[in-house]
Length: 611
Image 1 (cartoon, rainbow, N blue to C red):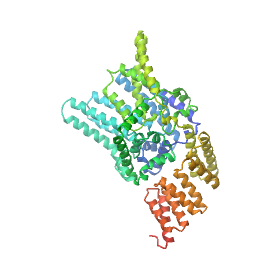
Image 2 (image 1 turned 180 degrees about the horizontal axis):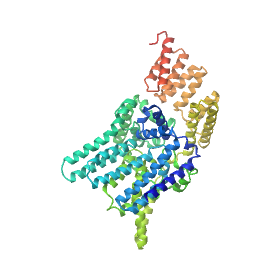
Image 3 (image 1 turned 135 degrees about the vertical axis):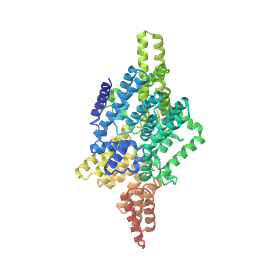
């Protein structure tokens, strides 16, 4: 039975991968997936984690780097392994259902997870979602085991599993704390003080055994601080908790995202390790200064979390339904109603009521703590995936309960239950559409594909291959601009394509259009300045570079080209200062060498010997 469920889940995921194989994004990771892919490749090659490992949760890029090391960087191998892991999650869900309730509930829940379209999509992308969902089931199985057998090794194992889960998805930390309190409460109930103290010590030891090395790596190779939480955590908290959350929630990859991450720098906080404190203070001031707005924001995020639709983050899974027969059948939207969550939630509510006396407290604690943790930060479809297996258990109870009612001919009760389910489905559908849902994700997908093609063109040494990638980039940007002619990022990137091709005038036209739509676009100002510098129009170049730095004072490359523009204008003291300011920013070794060379040249030009 478990073998059959595994094979079914794996077949569904294999069919999805086969359908996606012809889509450009299959071999071109986008946004977070691209970041994870690059980090993993670099770590597999060098054996040293970069700072990016600790910008986001570090365990998934470490996992991916192991896959890449064994497969030679194969994206297909990584997605296949994750599909297998997803099939294992289905089997574990079935086992959990059998342990908690009975075999029938386990089988139905396993089938739901096997056929849950959004989970199939996220498990086969280079994202941490599938791994985060996987850890939730072993954690619950271990806690159930502890409820039945007080083995001293179980708290130790719980600490290790908890560390794995937190290092994959930090919002799990709330459940870990709640579960630890639950364990201690069970120990105290059984009497004595020694056993709770021992369990706590063993749990902390297991957690530290895995978590501490990551904290040390962060201090030595990351951002110089001992922390297992990602540097982006406080930024994510701010994204969902500020006076204008729609502005932050809809900040897109490109200049909008760069400007958001640069907020501390604009306020004079230059050290990256200090940025989390800046964002946390912003959230604190908002919560205390406008408690009504803060509570209203929490209410809006609660509606998003329990909404029937999948709230997109960077890429909308619905865009891939044309490529994947699995998504066409298992992920869709009719008006404001979203499938499958719009069906899963009411069934889980019905099942939760029917199984309320049999479901252990830890199950409810898991659902509540995960929902609260995500709502406290911000909501997207992929962030609620870890609760799907547990909701599937309750939904299975609801399905079986309705089947039994039909079999027994209890028509009045069926009518009441169906009315309640329909009401919950309606309530989960009515709110919205939310601001994140109003974006044109198809235009953004074309833009992201264009960026990937452009980066490949820059990196390749083969002229013909580079030219082909540039053509693909240009076509992608043009498709994006056909849908959104005010897409400043796409205009800027299209200008970069023309600049690489040696057409500075067309590039300048594109930068001008980008700046017309977004006057604060630092990258467009920077790129405009580079062309002017090449034309030896030094004063105009200086003006452009200073406009760029006014919006992004942490972009070291702009200080480099500003310095050379200032040298060209015989403003050597200012050129030396630009080099020094660039050197104060953490950047690549190559860029630092170029900034040092600029500083030496500026000193020599001003009559001083370089030191």
